Image (cartoon, rainbow, N blue to C red; front, side):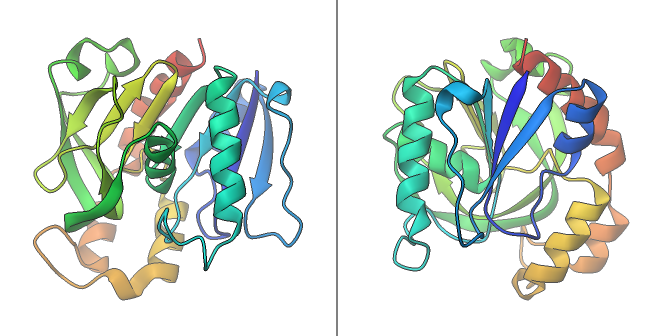
Length: 228
């Protein structure tokens, strides 16, 4: 199994994905969007594409010119019928590539908050092992419309569209890949966003509520089903 990862910033690496891939002896390759010379493999060189998160928005092409190339690359992977997993910004980029709009959510959502399965989510085999109300880590201010023909899998009080699936494309707005190290890295580099609000926890609340070890088994099982 060959997995390719699009990483947008140094401080948001793949987290739990790396350990899971090593456990199964799957190969991991990377495109680092923050590098001066960006590597774009041929889509024939991988089986699964994983698009990670980042603090930028999908429309910030003037600030991040590589976004144009990344969007074309994602569309190539869709056309090649690859398994694609988008996480947070990755989910937004995937939704846009599938024709949906991305825009500011009514609330910022940062910290540990529950997501709830929809009726379709309850029947999707990818999430069959996951609780109907799953407490997960969030860090986002934007959201997306559902792509045409996509199914909504999870929702939350702060953000209606938390996860979707269309064929082999799965978008997840929250961060199931986060381990404690990645969570600390995000806090260290994006601490300015932790302004207490209805759905924004303080740094102290986040660290106290850390349940990433508990969620590891859920995410590993999801990944195993994803690549079957």
